[in-house]
Length: 484
Image 1 (cartoon, rainbow, N blue to C red):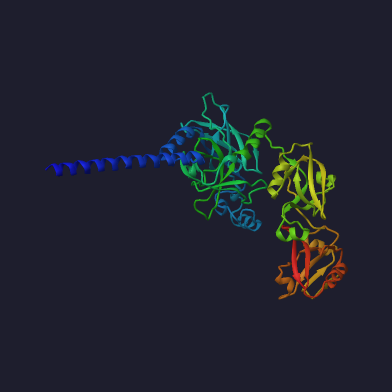
Image 2: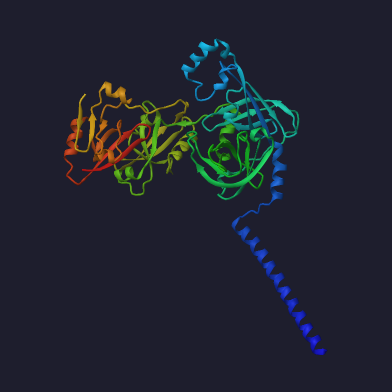
């Protein structure tokens, strides 16, 4: 009996020790996990924290309803609104069969979101939400309604500032730091998708610095937090309850892909709109393009850094400073530029009338030029290029620049030859040379006319590479390599 009791006591002791060890081990795991989270700045996200964010920030998020009066879109015509709205043939058709009935104006209603940034009633939203609106109605979370007026708009960044008048103590959303945002970090979107007010969705930051072709200042935050039509203009919030983005766009054919304007990009725009109702940006007067691997090799730039000047607009600051096409911009005011966006944003941020030191590379020689920055007028600057024809063994049919050729290919340059045809199955076709390409150089030799072109090609030996430095409409400068 004593032996049995002793065995039981020993067994109980072992069980107690094992339990104590297990508890200690679990505590160590929990402590270590917390310690790791703290060490790496990882925030835990739970449903409770999302609830708290919704309750804290939700009151500052507003529903925006607008009304636009569309001219000449009556009861019949408006059913065909869309891809044919600007087609005169369809308008003539309706005139003939429906008379003047289709000319009646009609009201187009749309929905969006926004958020209050101060107690004076200023609200941030998207430009496309309020652009052209005759009436803007703002509805708060407490269901109070206000008429709003536009303070200012900036189509380039798709931002707008509107204002309501209220004697109430309006709730506001604090602005955060989008530069501190990390990929994989939790974010929350609040808005009114499809008119469903105060909808809250959560997800993570999928990417930063996205370019989606919406304007010259593309720098979007990509998120998988659900964003739908009606969310436009609403806030994207971090787990500290700060606005770090303005929800703006979605991929129509994609699911879980949305884009938001970084709040750091918006801050200066919002401040200027509040003070003056418009945004003033610096203007240099150049068209630029990234430096491709082929172009970098052509210019002998080993690290491939820099931005190529594709065109210099006459009379603008760059032209006055002595910048020329084919110069490579390396730095602006001591700051290196690695992308076209770097150049655009850096110049835009320089004050009008201020001088910018621009470091360039020209034909292997570095130099620094000084340009006095002008005001960007936001007019559309488009590149435009200002009969003898020749064919060679590469399959290239090239022509001198004549008035007829210039009109046909919309060019205004005086030197170079135009590719007017390419022989099927030729080396030129295989190298992706295209009709309309303007050949400016052959193996670093400038080409003025077809005689120069033929002479330059003839000097290249069989089996050697011919480098054609060309200009292609809507793409800028390119290098085409063809083996003779």
